[in-house]
Image (tube, rainbow, N blue to C red):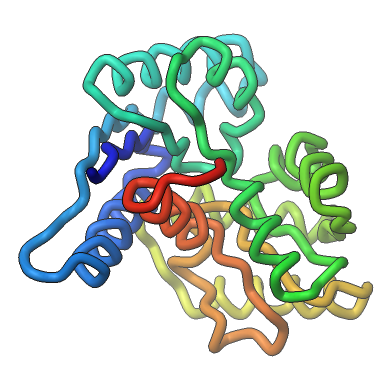
Length: 235
Protein backbone atom coordinates (compact mmCIF):
# COMPACT_ATOMS: atom_id res chain seq x y z
CA UNK A 1 0.00 0.00 0.00
CA UNK A 2 1.28 3.46 -0.88
CA UNK A 3 2.32 5.53 2.12
CA UNK A 4 1.25 9.15 2.52
CA UNK A 5 4.05 11.68 2.10
CA UNK A 6 4.10 14.77 4.32
CA UNK A 7 5.53 17.93 2.78
CA UNK A 8 6.38 20.95 4.93
CA UNK A 9 6.60 23.55 2.21
CA UNK A 10 6.41 27.25 1.45
CA UNK A 11 10.14 27.87 1.90
CA UNK A 12 9.68 29.01 -0.79
CA UNK A 13 6.51 27.91 -2.58
CA UNK A 14 8.48 28.06 -5.84
CA UNK A 15 10.53 25.01 -4.85
CA UNK A 16 7.63 23.35 -3.01
CA UNK A 17 5.72 23.29 -6.28
CA UNK A 18 8.67 21.45 -7.83
CA UNK A 19 8.56 18.85 -5.05
CA UNK A 20 4.86 18.30 -5.67
CA UNK A 21 5.34 17.92 -9.41
CA UNK A 22 8.38 15.65 -9.20
CA UNK A 23 6.79 13.31 -6.69
CA UNK A 24 3.56 12.96 -8.63
CA UNK A 25 5.37 12.49 -11.94
CA UNK A 26 7.54 9.74 -10.45
CA UNK A 27 4.60 7.90 -8.89
CA UNK A 28 2.64 8.06 -12.14
CA UNK A 29 5.65 6.79 -14.09
CA UNK A 30 6.20 3.88 -11.73
CA UNK A 31 2.58 2.82 -11.23
CA UNK A 32 1.10 3.88 -14.56
CA UNK A 33 -2.48 4.70 -15.36
CA UNK A 34 -3.85 7.68 -13.51
CA UNK A 35 -1.91 7.05 -10.29
CA UNK A 36 -0.65 9.98 -8.27
CA UNK A 37 1.01 10.38 -4.90
CA UNK A 38 -0.76 10.54 -1.56
CA UNK A 39 0.47 13.82 -0.06
CA UNK A 40 -0.33 16.01 2.93
CA UNK A 41 1.12 19.45 2.19
CA UNK A 42 1.31 22.29 4.68
CA UNK A 43 2.75 25.49 3.25
CA UNK A 44 3.98 28.25 5.58
CA UNK A 45 4.13 31.98 4.89
CA UNK A 46 7.74 32.44 3.81
CA UNK A 47 7.75 36.07 4.96
CA UNK A 48 7.49 34.82 8.55
CA UNK A 49 10.32 32.35 7.99
CA UNK A 50 12.58 34.87 6.29
CA UNK A 51 12.08 37.30 9.18
CA UNK A 52 13.12 34.86 11.92
CA UNK A 53 16.06 33.67 9.84
CA UNK A 54 17.55 37.10 9.26
CA UNK A 55 16.92 38.33 12.80
CA UNK A 56 18.56 35.22 14.21
CA UNK A 57 15.43 34.07 16.03
CA UNK A 58 16.15 30.38 15.59
CA UNK A 59 14.04 29.47 18.61
CA UNK A 60 11.06 31.12 16.95
CA UNK A 61 11.92 29.35 13.70
CA UNK A 62 12.01 26.02 15.50
CA UNK A 63 8.59 26.54 17.04
CA UNK A 64 7.18 27.53 13.66
CA UNK A 65 8.53 24.34 12.12
CA UNK A 66 7.30 22.11 14.93
CA UNK A 67 3.80 23.59 14.71
CA UNK A 68 3.66 23.03 10.95
CA UNK A 69 5.04 19.49 11.24
CA UNK A 70 2.44 18.57 13.89
CA UNK A 71 -0.32 19.75 11.57
CA UNK A 72 1.02 17.48 8.84
CA UNK A 73 1.18 14.52 11.18
CA UNK A 74 -2.40 15.14 12.31
CA UNK A 75 -3.34 15.22 8.62
CA UNK A 76 -2.33 11.58 8.26
CA UNK A 77 1.17 11.65 6.78
CA UNK A 78 3.32 8.56 7.31
CA UNK A 79 6.63 10.45 7.10
CA UNK A 80 7.82 14.01 6.58
CA UNK A 81 9.98 15.98 4.18
CA UNK A 82 11.08 19.46 5.22
CA UNK A 83 11.18 21.05 1.76
CA UNK A 84 14.16 23.31 2.38
CA UNK A 85 17.83 22.79 3.22
CA UNK A 86 18.29 25.71 5.60
CA UNK A 87 15.53 24.72 8.03
CA UNK A 88 17.17 21.35 8.61
CA UNK A 89 19.07 23.30 11.27
CA UNK A 90 16.22 22.30 13.58
CA UNK A 91 15.81 18.79 12.17
CA UNK A 92 16.46 17.09 15.52
CA UNK A 93 14.02 19.31 17.40
CA UNK A 94 11.26 18.72 14.84
CA UNK A 95 11.88 14.97 14.63
CA UNK A 96 11.80 14.64 18.43
CA UNK A 97 8.30 16.17 18.58
CA UNK A 98 6.80 13.74 16.07
CA UNK A 99 5.82 10.09 15.99
CA UNK A 100 6.53 9.83 12.26
CA UNK A 101 9.98 9.66 10.62
CA UNK A 102 11.57 12.72 9.00
CA UNK A 103 13.75 12.25 5.89
CA UNK A 104 16.87 14.42 6.17
CA UNK A 105 17.71 16.17 2.91
CA UNK A 106 21.46 15.85 3.48
CA UNK A 107 21.09 12.07 3.74
CA UNK A 108 19.56 12.02 0.27
CA UNK A 109 22.48 14.11 -1.00
CA UNK A 110 25.11 12.11 0.86
CA UNK A 111 23.89 8.81 -0.53
CA UNK A 112 23.94 10.13 -4.10
CA UNK A 113 27.42 11.60 -3.70
CA UNK A 114 28.74 8.32 -2.31
CA UNK A 115 27.13 6.38 -5.16
CA UNK A 116 28.90 8.69 -7.60
CA UNK A 117 32.27 7.83 -6.05
CA UNK A 118 32.94 11.41 -5.01
CA UNK A 119 34.55 12.38 -1.70
CA UNK A 120 34.94 16.18 -2.01
CA UNK A 121 32.05 18.46 -2.95
CA UNK A 122 31.24 22.13 -3.03
CA UNK A 123 28.16 23.37 -1.18
CA UNK A 124 25.95 26.20 -2.42
CA UNK A 125 23.01 27.39 -0.36
CA UNK A 126 21.86 30.17 1.86
CA UNK A 127 24.46 31.77 4.08
CA UNK A 128 22.94 29.84 6.99
CA UNK A 129 23.54 26.51 5.25
CA UNK A 130 26.99 27.31 3.89
CA UNK A 131 28.35 28.83 7.10
CA UNK A 132 26.61 26.53 9.57
CA UNK A 133 27.84 23.11 10.64
CA UNK A 134 24.59 21.13 10.58
CA UNK A 135 24.89 20.18 6.90
CA UNK A 136 28.64 19.75 6.62
CA UNK A 137 28.88 17.71 9.82
CA UNK A 138 26.25 15.22 8.67
CA UNK A 139 27.99 14.69 5.33
CA UNK A 140 31.36 14.32 7.00
CA UNK A 141 30.32 12.07 9.88
CA UNK A 142 27.87 9.82 8.04
CA UNK A 143 29.32 9.70 4.54
CA UNK A 144 33.00 10.71 4.95
CA UNK A 145 32.49 13.55 2.48
CA UNK A 146 34.67 16.68 2.59
CA UNK A 147 32.76 19.91 1.93
CA UNK A 148 34.15 23.06 0.35
CA UNK A 149 32.17 26.29 0.69
CA UNK A 150 32.60 29.42 -1.44
CA UNK A 151 34.67 32.36 -0.22
CA UNK A 152 32.89 35.18 1.60
CA UNK A 153 32.21 37.32 -1.47
CA UNK A 154 30.86 34.34 -3.38
CA UNK A 155 28.69 33.30 -0.41
CA UNK A 156 27.17 36.76 -0.36
CA UNK A 157 26.36 36.51 -4.08
CA UNK A 158 24.75 33.09 -3.72
CA UNK A 159 22.70 34.15 -0.68
CA UNK A 160 21.51 37.43 -2.18
CA UNK A 161 20.30 35.84 -5.40
CA UNK A 162 18.34 33.22 -3.46
CA UNK A 163 16.46 35.75 -1.33
CA UNK A 164 16.17 38.62 -3.80
CA UNK A 165 15.31 36.58 -6.88
CA UNK A 166 14.80 32.83 -6.71
CA UNK A 167 12.28 32.68 -3.86
CA UNK A 168 10.02 35.00 -5.84
CA UNK A 169 10.52 33.18 -9.12
CA UNK A 170 12.95 35.55 -10.81
CA UNK A 171 15.24 33.54 -13.07
CA UNK A 172 17.93 35.73 -14.61
CA UNK A 173 20.69 34.68 -17.01
CA UNK A 174 23.03 37.19 -15.38
CA UNK A 175 22.53 35.47 -12.03
CA UNK A 176 23.10 32.04 -13.55
CA UNK A 177 26.45 33.21 -14.88
CA UNK A 178 27.40 34.46 -11.41
CA UNK A 179 26.57 31.06 -9.94
CA UNK A 180 28.60 29.31 -12.61
CA UNK A 181 31.60 31.45 -11.70
CA UNK A 182 31.15 30.53 -8.03
CA UNK A 183 31.02 26.84 -8.99
CA UNK A 184 34.20 27.24 -11.04
CA UNK A 185 35.94 28.80 -8.05
CA UNK A 186 35.09 25.88 -5.77
CA UNK A 187 36.05 23.42 -8.50
CA UNK A 188 39.42 25.17 -8.71
CA UNK A 189 39.72 24.61 -4.95
CA UNK A 190 39.29 20.86 -5.32
CA UNK A 191 35.57 20.14 -5.50
CA UNK A 192 34.73 17.09 -7.64
CA UNK A 193 31.01 17.90 -7.64
CA UNK A 194 28.64 20.53 -6.28
CA UNK A 195 25.60 20.29 -4.03
CA UNK A 196 22.76 22.63 -4.93
CA UNK A 197 22.00 22.94 -1.23
CA UNK A 198 19.07 25.29 -1.50
CA UNK A 199 15.88 23.95 -3.02
CA UNK A 200 15.54 27.06 -5.21
CA UNK A 201 18.96 26.81 -6.86
CA UNK A 202 17.90 24.06 -9.30
CA UNK A 203 15.45 26.58 -10.73
CA UNK A 204 18.52 28.46 -11.99
CA UNK A 205 21.36 25.94 -12.44
CA UNK A 206 21.07 22.58 -14.21
CA UNK A 207 23.51 19.75 -14.79
CA UNK A 208 23.86 20.79 -18.43
CA UNK A 209 25.27 24.13 -17.27
CA UNK A 210 28.11 22.61 -15.25
CA UNK A 211 31.05 20.36 -16.17
CA UNK A 212 31.22 18.55 -12.81
CA UNK A 213 28.47 16.42 -11.22
CA UNK A 214 25.60 18.45 -9.79
CA UNK A 215 23.60 17.13 -6.85
CA UNK A 216 20.12 18.65 -6.99
CA UNK A 217 18.81 18.30 -3.43
CA UNK A 218 15.22 19.03 -4.42
CA UNK A 219 15.09 16.11 -6.83
CA UNK A 220 17.12 13.76 -4.63
CA UNK A 221 14.89 14.46 -1.63
CA UNK A 222 11.70 14.05 -3.67
CA UNK A 223 12.83 10.76 -5.21
CA UNK A 224 13.72 9.38 -1.78
CA UNK A 225 10.17 10.16 -0.70
CA UNK A 226 8.75 8.26 -3.68
CA UNK A 227 10.97 5.28 -2.92
CA UNK A 228 9.81 5.17 0.70
CA UNK A 229 6.16 5.71 -0.18
CA UNK A 230 6.12 2.83 -2.66
CA UNK A 231 8.76 0.44 -1.35
CA UNK A 232 9.41 1.26 2.29
CA UNK A 233 13.00 0.79 3.44
CA UNK A 234 15.51 2.82 5.40
CA UNK A 235 15.35 6.55 5.99
